Length: 213
Image 1 (cartoon, helix red, strand yellow):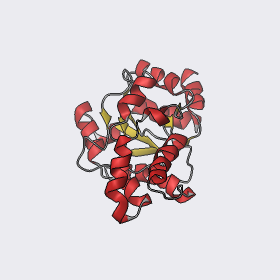
Image 2 (cartoon, rainbow, N blue to C red; image 1 turned 45 degrees about the horizontal axis):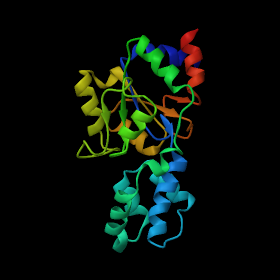
Image 3 (cartoon, one colour; image 1 turned 90 degrees about the vertical axis):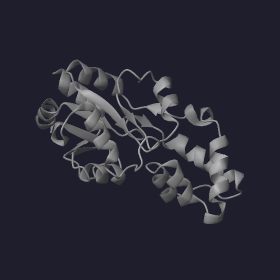
Image 4 (cartoon, rainbow, N blue to C red; image 1 turned 135 degrees about the horizontal axis):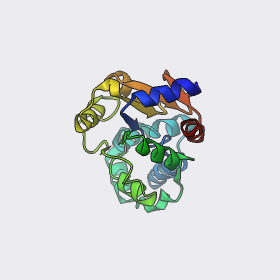
């Protein structure tokens, strides 16, 4: 995989990253956020299946998935009132991500974020000083159709003035895989070999070591 993946990167002009599970490890933060909503509604905490769903869905679709229909509007209101700082401390940056971004920048590769998050991205970008690495940052709040619809990737391609075969998308979920297929662009899975990626990355440190050799 080493030689093949390095050659693959060299042939591309841009890299599109998902956010949760790819740039940051946010599982604990997401679980706490949605469980806080459920607690306010006197509902039990999420089960494992629900935890996996909210990891990749928009906040709107996540709440719709975990609460009864008659409580949906109230759950949305509760979610809007929860300060994101209450869970921000539970988010961790993926190991060696900054080293990888620096190398990609050095090699002239453009980097973007494509996420189904909505209003919380500025907190994350600021906390980890990521603003200088990603442009554009496409969230579910700035497109009419969030992932897996391809609108977000087409928006990035338009801003970069690139063709689909000049970029690849790194994701960790079926939503990401379907998004890539719907364009289509090459898809690389991150820490999820069960997805149909051209490659599966187990760690950014490994990739950084390859690129430095």
